[in-house]
Amino acid sequence: MSTDRATPKTSEAGRRGAAPTRPRFAFEDPLPSLPETARKLLVAAKEIVADEGFGALTLKAVSERAGENKAMISYYFDNKAGLIAAVLDSVIHDEYLVSLDRMRDVAPGERTQRLVSEMRRMDAAVDDFQVFFELLPHVLRDDVLRRRIARLYQWYWSVKLEWLGVQDGPKAMADPDLLGLAQVLSAVIDGLAIQAALNPGFDLGPPYRVFARMLERSLPGAPGG
Image (cartoon, rainbow, N blue to C red; front, side, top):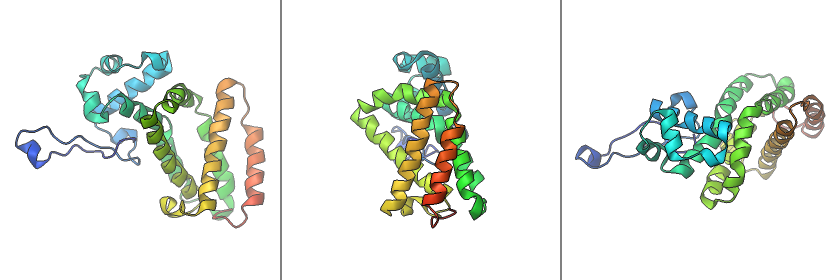
């Protein structure tokens, strides 16, 4: 998730009566692995944005919908900015993990088509992208949030390289060509998601067929190309 580790840990000072160390969640942690309270708060925040928009996203509204004490938002997410970052991550995070698992045993000759299929599957999740797009303008105006989401994208890029059969996605991003490829894949997903959100009847088939042909012609030497 968007914060840094999954299980609360109490420091020595905490055992002597001081406040316990806040839990942190890693980017790699799926939503079901979070503590129940954190998960309820995150789901409540996502539902509020989806149902009522960013203006309705207040700490009071989140705590009431989740049925949890408002102080738990600070405990798990630091503040409202941390909660927003977690919501943005959660709308597509778990789908990335499931998708990566599906790509692990793909034969090299099938990888390009399966890659495009996974990208299209993500773009079909229009409701989740609408939450993302609802929050994005506010993220762009907030330097702290903008930096946090920029770090999330680095994780997304590394996952895309693993889709392509690169064994160590994070390390591979030191290669400017591989990094550029991952960034292009993200741009295609995001750009087509915008068009699908604007037009419920938008057909993802034609652009992805064209994109598959582009990949097959331009990446003959890429892993799985």
